[in-house]
Length: 338
Ligand code: TYM
Image 1: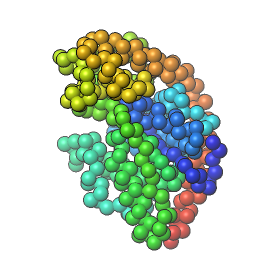
Image 2 (image 1 turned 180 degrees about the vertical axis):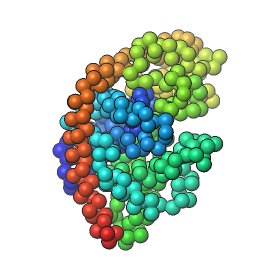
Image 3 (image 1 turned 45 degrees about the vertical axis):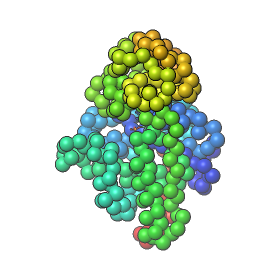
Image 4 (image 1 turned 90 degrees about the horizontal axis):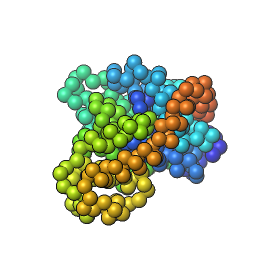
């Protein structure tokens, strides 16, 4: 796809935080979708380093994580020739528009955000203002490019609804109907929330202190086999229908990962394994994950060593993103009256 500052029919924007290794939750929930969208749309993918500033725990490794995550998305299939790949901090308009939206969005809207509540936990008073504000910066990311569609995992749904509210209120406040375009979320119908291997009710996450809770895209074969072996299960054999499966979160998650990686529906996976013990299923699941993830993992290691290549991809991406973003911010400032 070639890019211009004019608006195409379908423009995709999504972001990913540079906070350590990517895991199969990121891959199955978002990146897999990003890859297929490259075929017929303008695709813009950002390594959202400004968002990563919201948690102290990310600061020390930020620079290295940018290389890691850029390598990982390229290794997974995001092609720098087809997609814009850039670092959020290299396009200053994201921060600029974020301030404008700070003055458009309402406190009450942010107070409803469940991700802030989860991340801040009991130490709410100690959480950074940036963590609270996080979804407003997301709205700026998306609306700056007039993205029509935003492919994300299920956990980002509420943030996208907020982006839509901000777009509508900006248009209303400044009497410019249709100026900002409310983006459509693209969330896969199935397997859009991959859960922790240690707790089927908790989302698989980079910030989980236990590495055994997730399969990282750069895990070795032995690590994958070990993690699947140790994954939490229940004592029963696998069920023969979805209603029963729904009552068993760990089984549902593992069968979901199997289905998503093998590109088959849950029904088919259930019929393949019904009545079998977890030990037998886990061997098959580990084999499948190794099969799908090892080529990506090898490629990540190769790309990550070539920092000049990654710098070049990010620079070229930033140059292209800048053209679109600077034009948009000029229009916005004019509308506001700056
Ligand atoms: P981040 O870095 O947490 O996650 C990147 C993408 O991976 C998806 N994801 C999951 N999907 C399924 N199961 C899981 N366990 C899982 N964990 C993560 C996320 O939904 C996401 O799509 N706020 C965003 C980054 C962002 C963004 C944006 C996204 C910043 N600006 C603008 C879209 C548009 C985030 O937390 O990414």
